[in-house]
Amino acid sequence: MKKVIVAVLMVWIVFILQSSVFSRINIGGIVPNLMIILTACFGFMEGELAGLLVGFGCGMLMDVFFGSFNGFYALIYMYLGYMNGKFCNVFYPEDVKLPLALIISTDLLYGISCYVFLFLLRGRFDMGFYVGHVIAPEIIVTMIMTLLVYPVILFIHNKVYVTDRQQ
Image (cartoon, rainbow, N blue to C red):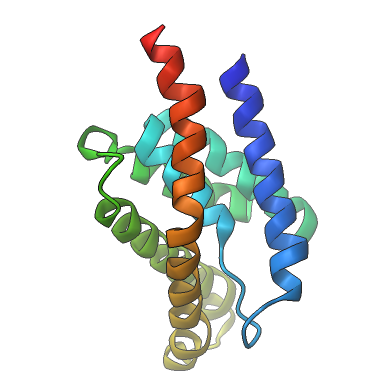
């Protein structure tokens, strides 16, 4: 039960930080995607089911507060969390290269998915502009934020989830 409460609290805290604090201190209109960082971290730290459930929670919050289609972000975040869960067996907490690579690729997949489903299917074909002005800057800002946020998520994970397994 403690794990579930901590996961729900982390989702809410990250959502509040992303939607209030970081949206005010954006860099050229680009905000780091903390929800992607959290979803990916839960996926490769705890496995497919945890990534899927945290992704669903993050996506539903995005849908309720910012989405134009109900369930769109929930579906994307669920798939991204599940796919990151596939790397649970090769995750080593002390090595930051795999988490950083997974979060970058997850953010890239998220950006491409949003482009395809929200813009391309509505007849907006300028993918070069979208990649250069939205996807690439968001990946860079998210990558920098990952280097700051990942140690905090790892610390919480080690205190709550790893210590429970050892007892």
